[in-house]
Length: 214
Image (cartoon, rainbow, N blue to C red; front, side, top):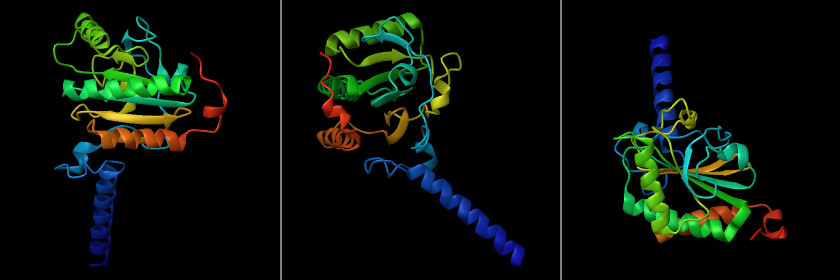
């Protein structure tokens, strides 16, 4: 009987741990997801952003495969992942907001949009989609990038452990370390203010002491 109780305690402990992992850092708008395990996505807060090499279709590094962690690891970074379920109205709102923040913060913030829809994937198709998107939204600072899938080995994007089933995964880092992440976050004014506040509150003093590059 004692051994049986120990087994039950272990099972309960594991169940609670899994539940907590599924709910960690999920905004209130997504905490009511049907199954916690379905919302697990991305590495944990405190881990380093892994290096990977997406295709740059639009932005300052167009026609390259520059890695954000390797080339822009200093200061703040935002990776905005979208997988197999793109919501283009939301994507456009998010990119408009992120472009505005990028312009305001200049060298102190680098944003990557990583599009990873496996459906009907070809390099030419993705290039055209993101080029058209960049022109439509007048994107100049945000990197519009793509990979064949979120589990792609060649680009090494799989190391980010992003769940293809989610609508979006926004990951905020500082000095290459993940400091916050958001799952299925909607582009509302409230969430824009929340993210701006997070950037403001986690920035270092030098962010304001060094003149921005124009």
